[in-house]
Length: 231
Image 1 (cartoon, rainbow, N blue to C red):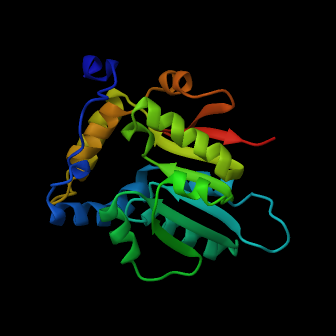
Image 2: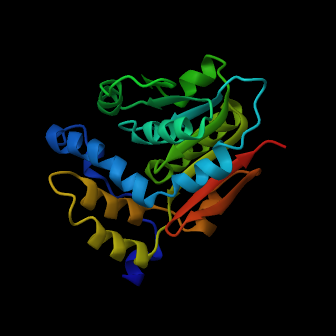
């Protein structure tokens, strides 16, 4: 296991990323992401510490851009927390994958959430700005050129901060997820989740890959945030 985790499996492929993957398993994967992210991703802490505290002009909502939103579960989760807190929040979720965007767009309409099939570069071209730019489990999917492009776009789009939350590669994370994901059947959750851990960065690697102005911070036991803050 130690040897397995020594280097990133950057060339490994997650089945859900294949264009010809089983559509039924893919749909089930999008449905199950909400459980996984709510339990393991550490977003509740990030929401309380980093999103809910954003100072905005007047009474307008805090605007959030969720890049690579997948099936939209994180946007829905953030919206529900904000509604309970009485925090005005507007979330735009984008994903370039038409299958993910289709799933998100088929969700029941929710106040303060919009989904689009789009790339971050599309929003840069539109001159858009958001208080907070986020992503979840996206960084390990990207080749070096795509990572640099995402971070450049994030700097342009974020008026206040950008927070890219991702896994930390470790034997412990691999072993624990291997057991924890056993109940998730008829989807790509377990197999792709283990591949994701193998493809993910260790903190020092992620720090070395990031341009100046970005910092790597621990967000939960097996997650880290690549963060950019203005001022």
